[in-house]
Length: 186
Image (spheres, rainbow, N blue to C red):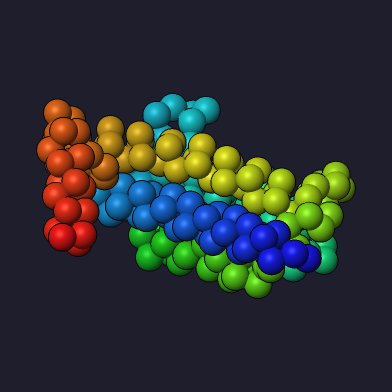
């Protein structure tokens, strides 16, 4: 592998890890703003609660990222249908399941090297490149992170604390970035 390909591969893996971590930070910040009973609320019988989405994401992470390079991403031990059933009795229990999934994902990403990106793996018996699987999971987790945030925002109501740039403050935010850059480059 040439130096440029090696560097590109490291950059892709670092960027993917940063994006996964950013998704987790956003979700964690939103989830902290609601109570355990709110985590278990669903809009209707066909909707998923925050707790159920967290459980599903974790189940997906554990299945996809356990033994990532050597076995199918849809593990025989995974019970996907059960991921959509809320049997949680405490917030701590939900958070433990959530953290276990993220730990599985992040540990697996750290083990990958640039040469792995074009390797073939399988998900549900379909071939996929490692880089394709990473993009697939970034998209999947991004989708569910968005769901979590919208639900938490709705449930938190007026107590909600914005996760990104508050409305009407884009110019101030950009100016702060410019000021910080100017201060670091006198």
